[in-house]
Each structure stands twice: as C-alpha cells, then as structure tokens.
Image (cartoon, rainbow over all chains, first blue to last red; front, side):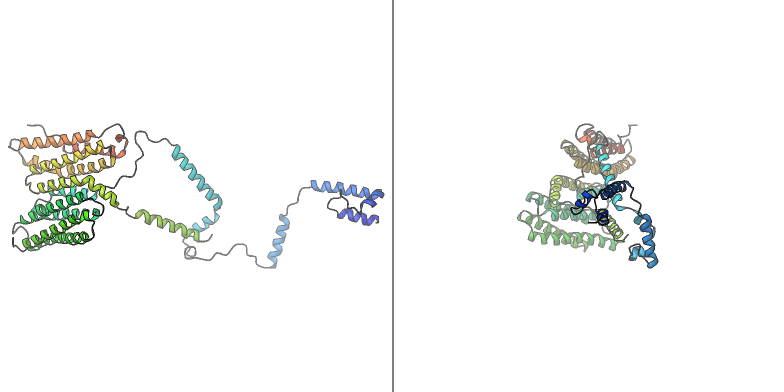
Length: 275
Length: 176
C-alpha cells in the first residue's frame, strides 16, 4: 500500500482513531502517515467544536429557486361555503383562523378547573342550606283556590257561578283521568263523590237559579252550552277510561260518567225551560 | 379554518336554546298520586267552601267563608311545618296568600264600607276580622326562625309571605 492510498483511506474514515485492519501494517511502518492520522484526529476534534451554521439562508435560496420555477401553493385552498362565502362572518373567521386551538382548548380547560375549584372553596352563605329543586305543585289545587276567590269576589251571579263550577268539575274529571291507573279505590271514589257534589250542588243548582230575563237569549244559551260541553267531555272520557281502567278505578269512572250524563241532561231541560 | 366548527358551534347553541325553551316535564303518575293523597281532603273542603260561598250574598258572609278557607289553609301550613316540608309549606302559603289578597281583603274592605259601626252586624264583622287576622298571624309565627326548616329559603319566603298576608288585612279598626 502506498502512502497516498493510505492517506486517502484515512481521510475517508468516519473515525480516524479507528483505522481499518488493512491500514494498520502501513501505519505501523510509516511515521509520516501516522502524523497524517494524528492530524486527522485533531482536525476531527476541532470540527466537532465548531457551531452548526444556520440553514435559513440555504432554505431561502431553495425557495427562491422554486419560486423562479413557477407558482407555489403556500396555503391550503378553502372551499367557500354559504357562511364564509357570504362575507358576513369574515372578521370572525379571520379571528378564529388566528387562534391556536391547542392553546385555546388548554386555556378553556384551565379556566374550567379554576372556576370549579373557586366555587368549591368559596365560602357559602351561612344560615341557608343549598336549595334542592322544588317538588311539583298541584296546579289543580291552585285552580281550585283561584275559583274559590272568584266566587268570593267576581262570580256573584248564578250564571257566572255555573261557569266556575263547570270548570271545577272539569278539573276533578281531569284529576281522575290522570291518576286512575295508580290511585287506589278510596281515592278514586272520593274524587267521584266530589264530582257528583259539584255537578249537582254547583253547576245544576246555580243553573236553576238563573232567572228569566237576567240574560239575553244568546248569553243564556252560551252559559248552558259551555257547561253542557264540559259535562259531555267528562261523560265521553270517563266512559272510555272506565272500560280499560283497573278494577279499583272502574266504578269511580263509571260514576263520573253517569253523573256527567245526568247533569248534562238536566241542563239541557233547563236550557229549554222545561224544569 | 373550515366552516365545519362554526356550523357545529351554531348547531350546539341552537340546540341548547331549544332545550332550555322546552317546558319542564309534567309530574309523573307517582307524583300525581302523591299529590292526590296530600290534597284529597283539601279538595273536598275547598269544594264545600266554594259551594257555601255560592250561597253567600253579603260581603260579611263572604268574609266569613273566606276566613274558613284561610283557616283551612293555615292548618295545612302547620302540618307542613310539623313535617318540616319546605316545598309543601311554600305551596300552601302561596294559596293562603292568594285567598287573603284576592278574597278576604277585598270582601273585608266592602264589609267595612257596607256595615255601619253601630249596625247589628258590626260586632260580627269585628269578630270575623279579628279571627282572620289572628289566624294569619299564628300561621306566620308557626314557621320557625331557627332549626332545620328555617334554613330553607323557601321556608323563609313563606314566613315573610304569611306575615305580609296578615299585614294586608291588619287588625280590625278601633271601635269609635
């Protein structure tokens, strides 16, 4: 092996401190080549200490070369939609584009955790327990109270009271229809008895007290028609449900249907002036 | 940025608005049964009072009937307090307040206007008025100011409402 070949091989080595086996005999006998190897080792160590040069200039030069070759797509194309294409949301879309969603999401999560933490740690007002959701109230009870005050203040004439009591019967019928599947026999019978009482002592009794001449024929007809309609609806609904109701509710619903039918027939006769 | 996130955002907002605009679901069958159980006697007494009210043709008689209704509701107030049931207390207090405000007070005003202080009905009017005022005051005092029930906001509101109802009619005017 000549000195030139040996030195070329030395320079091509990735690590000059580790010469290949075929170089070792030449290096062992040639002091000049060992000096070259030592120099290569020293240069290698010096090179490692040098800072890595920035690639920006090279990258810019590369891009300029690409530009010179033709158009370059720098951003992803956006397909116009009805929202973004209209222009109405352009400022919002532009603002949203600038957001780094990774950080925004992290920020929202952090705020959430912070807020929950503050809520838990914040001192609660003393003297009151946290309120639970209120139980549902009986709307029918509220309407019954309202009708009682109506009777006390505004419904002083018999024809007005007929309307109030007819609505009362509609409420009782509604209650019976709502609960007939779950209420026990005693509850259902109590509702049927109340229904009977309000029809006979309320609707029919007040209808009897409507004196001739106090209302125009049209007004009188409307009072009776409205009340009879309420009773007819009750008759229909209660009859239908009585057929499919459990045994504990069947009798009560049948009683409501019978009461409604009797009341409606009596009102029909009163409306015709037959009673 | 693609429009998809925007559309999803608007869809979620619209869905949330729609859901929040929905009326709350009505009471369940079990809750209706429970309400019927709790109110059955009250329904009956109110129906009796309503039928009686329809037979009253003077303001004094109507005051007396309203007082009976108020007494009945005051009894429910006491039952709710004994049971430490803030929801029931709030419910019956609302009704008692309504009866006082819309039935008792206007008829009392009419009765005091209609009945001369020296008329035979005057002592009865005073007696009914005093009885109604006492009943409302007692109901307000029934709601405790300390203890478990007192810590509920609804119970606190009920106590204030009952006191307001008593103040609405006040005691009978002094005899001249």
